[in-house]
Length: 332
Image 1: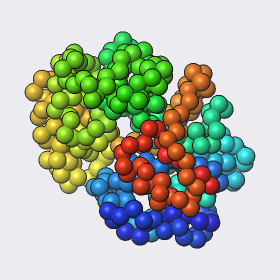
Image 2: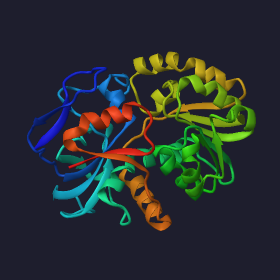
Image 3: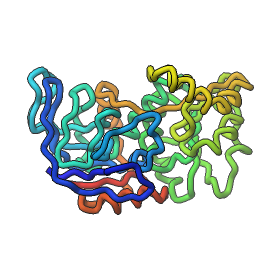
């Protein structure tokens, strides 16, 4: 089979398409013939070595974190899936490789695809939807009627996070460029802030939760708009001691991340607020709940562009610009 692989960490976006063996599955795995795969900023971070302290990989490495496809074989202990099932997944962190014609994946990391989505649309869901789900439920323990702010909420993440947040009864405010306003409001946002015309720090206060998608430079301002005891979870900030403990990292990493995230923890603690860092994990059970929500609410995904597998490097370049309006997808 063909697979798009990296040979080392590099600032250059240049994957090689190589011929490799189709993976063999164990008793709890399924073999998926990949139909489409989502291309994400996470892939760029893995490629350039930015997250080595969280997840370090051996080379050559087949890149890619999420996919949709059809099951071609099942291990003897797999009970909930069968050959022919249309499935999608955020692959386990320690076993990525969505940019390939076939993938072996553990059965507890997959879900059947939503019936209302195509393979291309479904491939845009797992990473962003699980990130939103885990941020809201596992980290924030978000409560109904609370106010949630998502800065930069007009992209692929917001397209999933906003409907999930609304299904939990939250009041959702998002910011972004004006061209994202109508779609953001149409999928459930209660308020929209055009960041070029308004400064959210001047119009928002007493917010219960913030999901940060912008990174470290913005976190102090985001913390300032939270009410006391408010919580911020960052997808692009710095890992901290709490994150290391929650992920059962060894003591040396706990100490290191404790130092790295200390300034943000101090900023948050000043007003009895909480700073959290999230690195999304594979979870088939949660993905199944997301599937039900997508079907029941007829949620659609936001697709920026699609590329063929041969154009994987073009797709990665498109994501690296940061200007995608929705997900970039490669098809097989």
